[in-house]
Image (cartoon, rainbow, N blue to C red):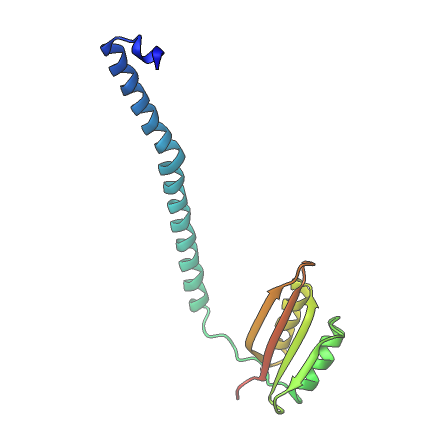
Amino acid sequence: MSWWALRSARERTLLATMAALLALVLVWLAIVRPLADSLDAAKARLDAAALALGEAKARGPATAPPMASGPVDAIAARTAAEAGFPGARVISQGPGRATIILDAARPQALFGWVAEMERRGLVVDRLRAQANADRTLSAEIVLQAGRR
């Protein structure tokens, strides 16, 4: 404070003005510009998503998946073992619906297998996945036969 007291009134005014302008510049550089850049990036992503949606709609309706041949639980158990999920628990809920419980699965393998189930005519009714400590997922998937 002794440094400040040694300054004349004019110097104090100039130093206070300089500090205020410096604060404004720092706020502009640290807060306003990054927020404006983030807003511009979000608008660009929105525009790209709207364009992609329009292109997808222009291609026409997607074809219906093929009908599954056989009970859902049997298809799920067989393909889960083939995909490397030997510990998969399959709970049948009738011939057209089954719940599959996996304790540990790599995310890429799990979602690749789910996509394969959809190609075989099974529809994912519910999928609940939770991350494990070892970078795997535990998942509960309810599959049902595609609608006619």
